[in-house]
Figure 1 (spheres, helix red, strand yellow):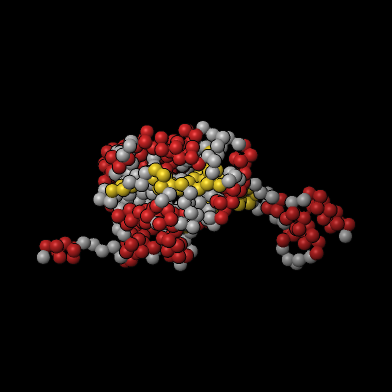
Figure 2: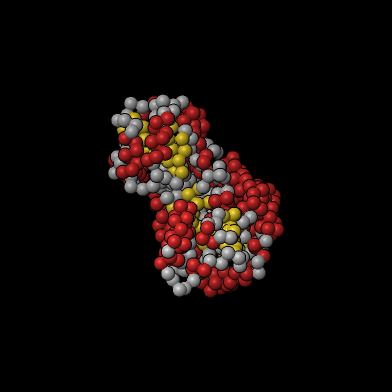
Length: 493
């Protein structure tokens, strides 16, 4: 009976509830509160304080949801958001200033500028793999641009979601920034509402649902998705350093559960054995002889993803290709770093994004064939990596491989550079954020032209004549010679 009463008393978050939340935020936004520089600074400083005072709780939540090592939690979840806040505080006043724009003879005399204005009320739907980073980093951009915000954390990281909701309510302005927890019903209720922008981090299947819902209201979206991020390894390198950097970007980033994680390696047949041996050596050095005992590896997020990953390596034509690792503990949702050599390109593991601790190595006769293999995959990944000292190959890589971001001789570190956009292309997403790109993502670039009453051109007014048309065409073209010819024709006519 008591349980029934609790269930009855539990508030249901439906479309009506979502509408009330949006209305409250829109009412706050209309007052102009979020547009002020002071409000934006206050919120960003409050977020810094929130991160500083609650780092142990954040680390504990990430350990509970993902067994994420404290090292990764502190660096990749907390410190990166901290850096984003500090960058925004340092640069935001400059970002907010109108940008001068050139004018033409057509509107002489005049001046012009581009004014960044907040979009309004925005929705951020985040992912479970980096529940604080991919929640708060976009929110930093939305705050710095002057928006009211709803954050929807992933229900697949429940401890982190609950902590986010508590901390945001305690530290940030609840009249303008809110967290809505829940699963599919709550997200669906939110997506029924009209937003001024939606930023979604996750997979392509859900992204299509988000985009379809946004289209009903003509709401613009930023989609940060994923894909099969390739790593080309050429034989002219320091293999030990390359191996360590690939490990750091693969297993050192949430045990492969990261959108920019290396998905597969391409190398030549005559170099593959050396690559495998290098991985065996360095993986044992980093995680020990029994990696399932290591405290430096995250676990798989849940049993569903554990079963999905197990299916990939249990496929008949793949299971025999394991050359290192493969150990599993279903009870603890652990899978060891696993290297597979020469898996068939038509196997399941090569058809979908792995998003886990499995790393296939595909071999080719010549390194140039790597580019054809990437192109034949049909998708444009979120990231692509190349390890080489060959300048010609570097140029070809940049010129021919289409991906959200490229890194030469390292993996994943481009996310730490705020002057670079974090963006997908094609199936890996659309739009971008990070640093000023976050500010721009949540801003409308408003064109403003100023004119006085002098210099009123009678040419634009009726009655229209061929001579007026000729002169106006010359003015619009911006050609001085054309204008002189038109004027000479006018006076000689």
